[in-house]
Length: 104
Image (cartoon, rainbow, N blue to C red; front, side):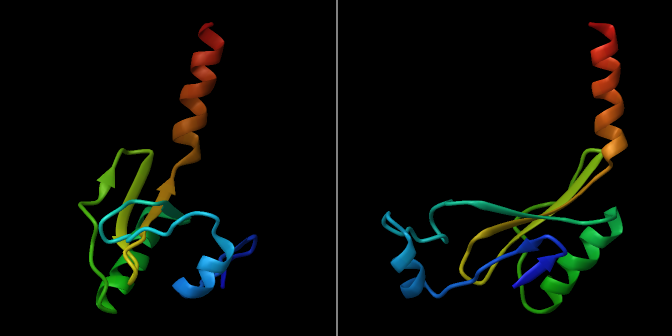
């Protein structure tokens, strides 16, 4: 599955995934095994993607998280795996880091 220009994902049914995994599989509805993230280009595109998933029958996995320089929303996929859709204002991260470096 193509996610973006440089991002792909392979989606497998459990029986096929079991052929690749060297560990016992867990039930993602009761155990956390991973958080999968997708970067969005804008704050608004986070909402658009998640709202599309909700309109298609998805459910939210919590309240939106708005930290000013970063905004995210989360939802489980049909198997219960946790997905985060995140927008980050890179200037909101780089500028504070540059200021910290110049103070040292």
